[in-house]
Image (cartoon, rainbow, N blue to C red; front, side):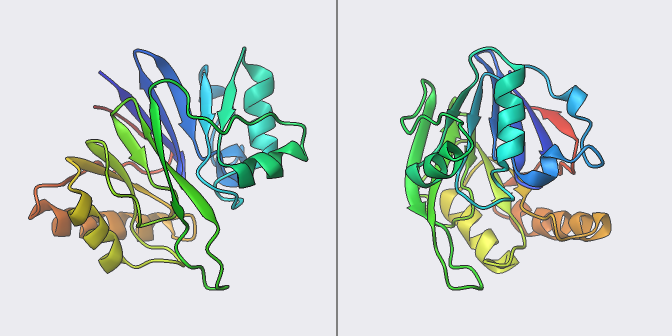
Length: 209
């Protein structure tokens, strides 16, 4: 049995029998007006898909490392270089129970496409970061529904290609609560015909898998 909790935007907590993994500790998840930080339990490892601030907030990473015992941070070399400037050690090799795939971020409105590392944790959850390029998924896929670098149509095609059993929404910090509800409802209806179930987690919500 596993539990997934969505903190905010693309930041997810996955707890299995092997412990708790936090993915993409972005700036919104470290905002006490958004998330009650005291509700974040013990974390054994932190996985970061890429260097953008909505996926890695150095102050949040430092907070996670300083509050726990032997918290390991894993990311690609670009994130490691970013966090080195904040005296945070990053391991670029995958920890036990985690697999990764190095792909590119989808092209942003600014024309950039930085390196992006998709992570699959314990064979339970795949977090693709900001990319439609990963070639495989765990039964649960974290899926961006609307973003500056993507569209609902491309996200649906991405999910249909990988065929997860379930998806959980991510990357919607620029939407209102009503907008997030609308996007999840539409995606749920579109994916249901493909046998893909939406787990409609809003910020702060949890589900047992």
